Image (cartoon, rainbow, N blue to C red; front, side):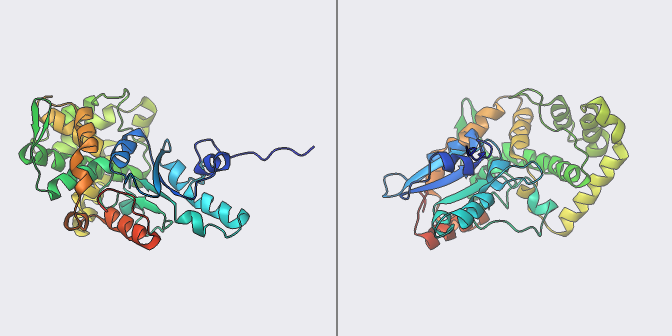
Length: 317
């Protein structure tokens, strides 16, 4: 008796399509999770001959693949069709794409090649950073969020602080230090982040406040492996590189950091999760004109893909 073939991880797009093959009159857009789904689903094209499906994939690896973790992504899906389906992957490449956060890949791995059907938020580091950048490109219109008003003067100082923390995040990836930046609880603002933001107007705050506070927040086994001097040195090296290469500040900004920093700098008048949600769900983005889109590599690449495949998938196209 023949054994049934073992399917890849359920969250793999290959597994999903093995279970329910893609419909020929549908376009599939893979995104990392539910927050990304909010933005892309709200702005997808509706009512056309081709239906646009937005599929949350529970993580970046399930989109781009991760060989070290044995996780299959879009490249493996196309390879599977090339090897097993008549006509190969040509037809499915016209219907399936993935969009994911850059997560500093453009800085850490500048020469790496990606599949043409994979789209990064690059140049901005992630979706939230992209949306703040988009808001600025549209003239920074005032946006009411509850009783708080989002305006340029309340956001610009936070961007500078987020850039600095972003350099530390890049140094962490390059050095493979495995420092933990995330909050332990969902929706929480990390104590090290709050204290560092509160004292960010002090001279030399990165070396005297930010780095010590970040290290203090690490588990004991990490504290033993990493020294303040090593982290400061790594930060300075990244800072010099970013300045020499004139790297965009939004390539450094972690959008979740930014929204938390905005909350702290504005006396907690706005909640960071509410700010993120407002940015993702704003009706303004459904009408992004070509003049604004030309400033964003992601939108330009998607527009080019849509043109090549005669498949308009967003309301602004």
